[in-house]
Figure 1 (cartoon, rainbow, N blue to C red):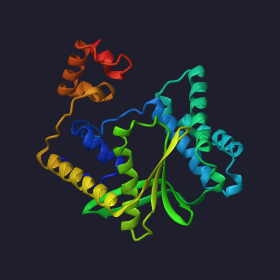
Figure 2 (cartoon, rainbow, N blue to C red):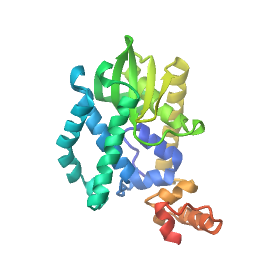
Figure 3 (cartoon, rainbow, N blue to C red):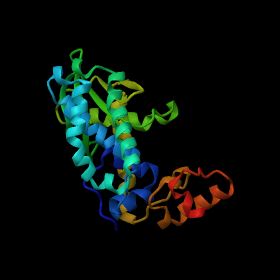
Figure 4 (cartoon, rainbow, N blue to C red):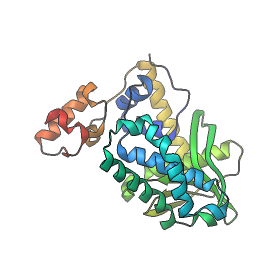
Length: 274
């Protein structure tokens, strides 16, 4: 019998929905999962923007963002996830430029000097339909007098049919703020840096749907932990799973896709069946 987690976060809930087997490797077995370069870039951009938006409004400039990036860079260089990338000098320069494009991408969406930021990196902890929930909100804003949840995304804006998972995340943040006894947010925003803002109205129905989906995930987590059976969900993402060499179903999926010519050559796990 596997130990039940103390809480679900948006990322852990999404991971279980995607593949319970991969969730087990990460959250039960606690196997190390190296972060790819895109994730590390996102972490650095988030850190710089967190510090920037914690400053008085008149200091939230691109020049100040550059100064913060230089100030925070030594910590990034020392971070184990960054070091694991093993970048040479040229690749490190490309990493810094990619990070800056993500940071500067905020100004393509809004002028942070005009935003009333209530809190950055706000931790929320609540029982949502009897599910222990824990999350960290990038920013809580007040726009036109109304509370707004804002979450940065440094990745590519997903197509319409793949956006529900991301919207679910900010709706859970809104539900948690409400459950904590705070003011219920009126809107929730996904800020795809350098691309566009997905702005969603927070309604009772959306909050109910988000809590219901989380409750369904929690029920699945509970059953899997009690039975110690974690279903694998083979698919194209097996090519990006760092645990696929420990999953017979995942390896079988790679073999099938390779034979059918449907395994992307840039997938990290493609080398296992090349």
